[in-house]
Length: 92
Image (tube, rainbow, N blue to C red; front, side):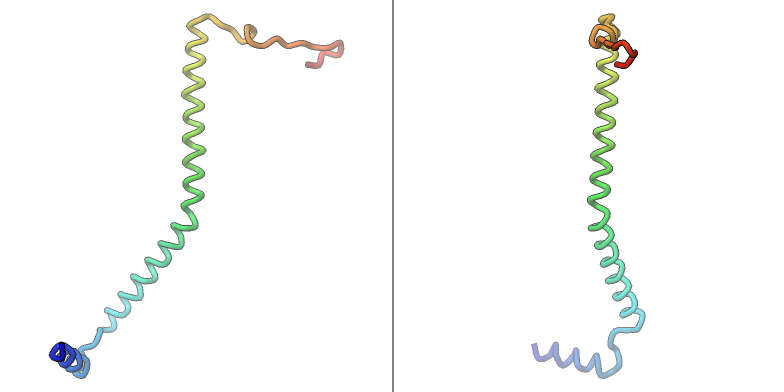
């Protein structure tokens, strides 16, 4: 234990501390990870919301296509489901 401390002290006394490029690199990595973490925390909810909306739209389009295909095979028309009634003024 004491031998390790002695060697460490000698290392620092000889001017062999961390080089300037090491300090700059470590600071750069720290800043990079802090910015990345901040951006991820801010953008994740927006990305999740956009992905959910896109999935819902895709699901609706697939369901609509399947229903229209099935109704087309059965020969069903829009008028079989909906009856539009108008008053004297021609309004629905």
